[in-house]
Image (cartoon, rainbow, N blue to C red; front, side, top):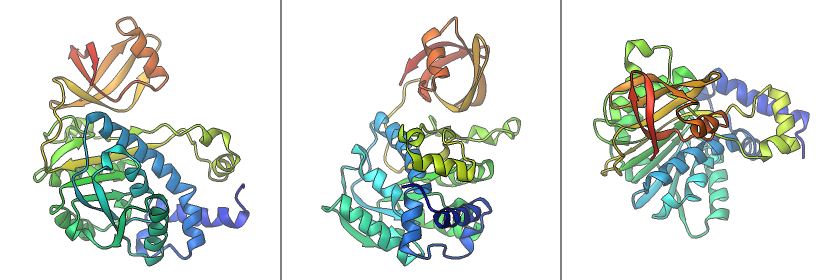
Length: 322
């Protein structure tokens, strides 16, 4: 059913807090009804972002380590629900939920129990978790809170972290990367283990972000049309920044592997791509004449973001899927 005016006002209040970074000042989960409303709107869009990350990790052949998974700052539990539906989570038998809101923890626990009755679901913090799941929390953490969190994260085996792609948040996630890469291997999105190329002064205007494709229902269901109109949101614009780390050795990538960052700039017969590899971040040209099928895929937004390619004088001269 379409949203009522009261429901839209509640969503607007939540959204204002998220955008103004004021939600971290107090507990905004005031009722189970508000949690349910958030879960079917903003959280569902976050779930679409997690789908992209999980598909990327599955394609890499990466698996979660055995042990306890903790959804830290779980909210409604959308991140852990998405993860547990993925083949990469087959080794997980216990899920711990942590949030400052007991209402949120109870809501997430009920949702998980209904979908995964075989799992043991507990409440707890990071100390005994092998995998830590973090989603959309950076704009609510003070520097001290973040420092404390990173100290505790070093005990984990694997970390999966997804954030919105606003430049200040993406830049903060790069800072997290630089701290944790001393203890962990980088799995994704980074195709290398070196210092982040975004930190080079010449890339100050860029930030590491990627895009998810919303499902068909985002454009066919009336609830999403009402949601779109109420908040002037372009449902096609589903961008994210993310980081996946592992203390175990990670599956190797082919030589010349690169990650495409953001959207390509399209011209009549060519496209400019921002690419990341062990040498840093640089723009490269892809021409329609050299790669007609790839150029068409790029226009349709179906070109993979991770691939192997050689670049000569700023131009892609060969391309292979990873």
